[in-house]
Length: 295
Ligand code: NAD
Image (cartoon, rainbow, N blue to C red; front, side, top):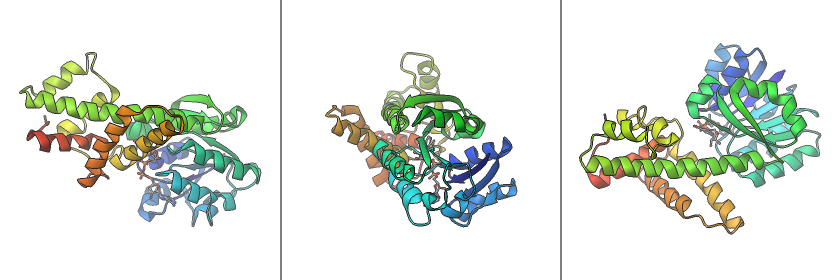
């Protein structure tokens, strides 16, 4: 299959490399030119624009920061819809609001182009290793057609239901990730302030009932090393909490934990940490408690 791939950031670049390494023809595009160099060296074709990248492709994949950018890239001037041919399939891998992908789905249907939402989980490591969990919304028969491509980037491909359903599951997942990340930072900081070594806290809690993905993924490689290069950026986590909060408002559902977690990430952004990994929230607690949660 010929695949067009737009958005070669932390996640997109690794996913694109895995698709290329699986033997598919690949054409890529990103607004940041340097992010395309590695793909070019590995044999991918480089597009001049989004529309140009989509020409002649069976499948067009997008991995972009937020709803507004996905909407612009697909529906906007010189975008995917202009370049894609009838019968092609758009697979949006970004985490965005279900309403936006539903609107894109309807606009693309008018031109005979299918759309599925296929947000991913598993972080930069999962993207590199091709072991992502993928949650898919849209027509089941369209998923079947693109499965060989999704199998290049993920190990668990879950069909959830109608268009937007994948994004809904993803925002619920990331609500939990955000809340758990803040809870981990708060707990590690308290334990350290109380005089327990951070490594001791980690070793015991990671094997006890207080453990979580956030603790396991973010203590050893990030917090304990003082390494806060993303990974998963605070700005993106903030956006995902906003998706959960606005969905909760639409459904009149209480959202205590999500709102509190979002305020902590908002504080981190105000402190200039927006482009750092989510584990960098520990820096706030370290400052407030005058401690260091390092190895
Ligand atoms: P990123 O910011 O590293 O990458 C986004 C890429 O999109 C960048 O290279 C950027 O230059 C490019 N881009 C922006 N506007 C563009 C445009 N108009 N045309 C073409 N390219 C454009 O973000 P990321 O961490 O790779 O995340 C991508 C998506 O995946 C987000 O929706 C995020 O929430 C989601 N996600 C991220 C992770 C993670 O751990 N980083 C995990 C799961 C899901």
